[in-house]
Image (cartoon, rainbow over the protein chains, first blue to last red):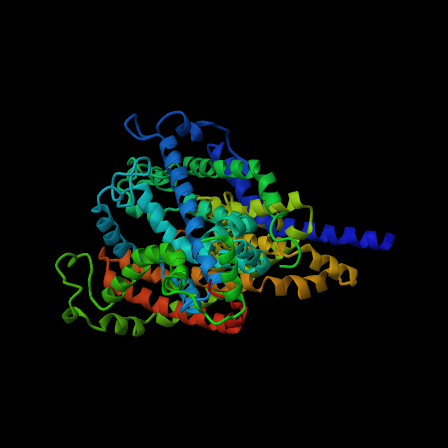
Length: 299
Length: 335
């Protein structure tokens, strides 16, 4: 018994040791980032003078009064990430349900085709997608005049979100299908016998049972939208426009005409990271408990 | 429609009774799966299928910045195979291919699948809160804007007085002369930089799949006296085959098409084409050629070959992981 306990401890010490060793480079780079944002210059991890001036973009616009503040960019980024995450979760779980639970012609073909879509490099599709977005802009109402998100055409938050949804779909469909597969058939069958339609079964019975899957997909969709650079940069006009997002806004600090203040770039980067960390910190309890749900017993 | 009738219908269809449904419900049940798929189909057609056809056509033309708007690229008369001939006779073609294979396989094996699985297994077997915190720490690499992320690694690799590794590790130990580590070991850093972003993807998917395994299996294996290693080998790994197939395939394709990190880190250097990978070449040709000329047609041709490589890889994976066996047939007949 004593021996067993000792072995258990040794095992967990090994586990923690390995985890910390593997994570070491992450600790180092982020330690450097935090020190840099509060320093004038650094040498390794040693600061050569402390300052708050790198964070001045928070209370005054860095490029004159006519320039949009970083808070507008933050709001836009949040809007983009939320819309994109909602659409991805909704669309991909619908398709995944059909692929996992229904029999129809072209099921396997559709599934492998979805994965193969991911083989297309986003950068080469940018020029053709531009043509498509310009075409959507010409459609009345949904093209250019939806309140809040501006519509789904060119130079709108909704349009950028829709393009990013397309690039997230292969991931979403596949991951959700895996989670649907693990749910017991009896649950669905009894709901159908009780007179529910397939749509009701999907929404009321199965969706609450794949919360871990929804959480995993939402986290990834949200993160990739929060960090997106190439797509918002290409499909919105101007680095300082009304539809600018944080990653694009960051480029203003690295223009060719002015000497780049790398420490301020680091501070903006850290600023972009903080809201997401806060979000994870406060939803920690919920995210941890999500895993407790799901199909009980053998699926 | 009353409840009894509906119930009868369910029972009929569940037990292969002679089908006596009227025409309309039959059509409806045939269309239902496609109704569920339709939103995906619309988005995929708009932003994948249509652009793809355009890229494919462009790869046969010599569209660039100088003749944009003049060249009628949609006319078959302007299509030639010149771009493809140019690629295969390129002096650096073998080197770029070799770089791509090395970059994808190393990053995939050591980080995107290997490290991801290790971190997922450790964090699901220790205290939940600590495990969650470590997963969050690994996610931070993905959360940081690419520009800043690369900046951090450049600071880590920097030359003697500035670089973190040189100042705090190699300096005191007396190893090396304090050179810029990106110039001495470019490949090591490319794999690390991409790996630390890539690993978090597999880590999240594996750990939520491991958490979703019914606890009964774990308890049963413990009762039978299985060691931790045996539990992992015979319970956990077989239960997460679908995520394993998915992460391996998806990440191979991601790595094949990713170039942003390498572009910012080494931009193909330090030597001539030393770290230039396929997708970076496509980007260079299409968007930033040395003579200020952006050759969209030529770049598209590089991209089309990359797509073909990706598709071949995906098909091989689907075979290796026995994709057909992983797809279970629906157990409920069409209703």
